[in-house]
Amino acid sequence: MTRALTVRDRIVREADASGFVAHGLHVLAGSDVAEHRWTPDIREDVHSAAKGVCVLAAGIAADEGHIDLDAPAAAYLEDVDLGSSVDGVTLRHLLTMTSGVDLPWSETMMTDWPDLAREFLRRPSRGRVFQYSNASTYTAMTVLAARVGDVGEYLDARLFAPLGIHDVEWERCPNGRIVAGGGLALRTGELASVGRLIRDRGMWEGRSLVSAELVDAMHGDWVSAGTTPGYDRYALAGWGGPGGAWRLHGAYGQLVIFRDDAVVTITADDHAGADAMAEQVVRMLEA
Image (tube, rainbow, N blue to C red; front, top):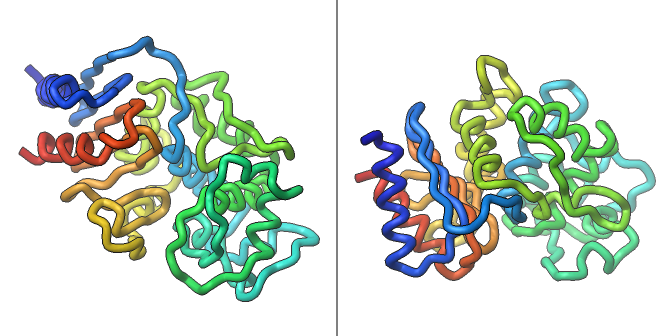
């Protein structure tokens, strides 16, 4: 039995025993793959795991010379009013949640203002402090759209098509832009392909889709995010932990967990049980 099969079977037993409401599981260990499904294999919102895809979009655009992650974000937009100390906020700050701008999530945030990105940028910044906000990722992708056009279409050609993923749909705001911080519908295996690309530092079937340096920054340039274990450090869309692992983590249990050469991808509908499941997965990988 391969390591991927062993890990898969242990995760399935743990999910069934704990009552974790999983939908799909994909285990990549080295070159071995094992999968399991609890529900039909359909595309579902991967929620904040989409932030990792947005980081890849920004990295690809930087590789192509369209943007500089460390340039002031507002420099790429026209006719934007900036809040206090926002003139120094970069795309990297937006993607690492360190703009210092406060705009909490709400169900109506995409329609509460004529343009959420401009509302975000006109608010004051408290400096380079961590403040998790879907509006921050949305603003970053609004900046990117000013340089590359529709970000969804941009990703179709440069990321999804090479991965063999087609007809991808994003939730969109009233202005037609991708919601960015969520709203991306993928199958478990499709999200796992993104995970494989990240594990392999941007390489896919011998071709570089995004620079290794950008991928490394997804789990290397940590910023302090608080004191809660598993949520105490954040990078470019990546959360540190559990243990020696790191992960993309979307609401309701969308997990892409990285540990050495292993990637475990889980889609689910169990917000309360996700942290415990992530801890169990890492224990299995580290055993």
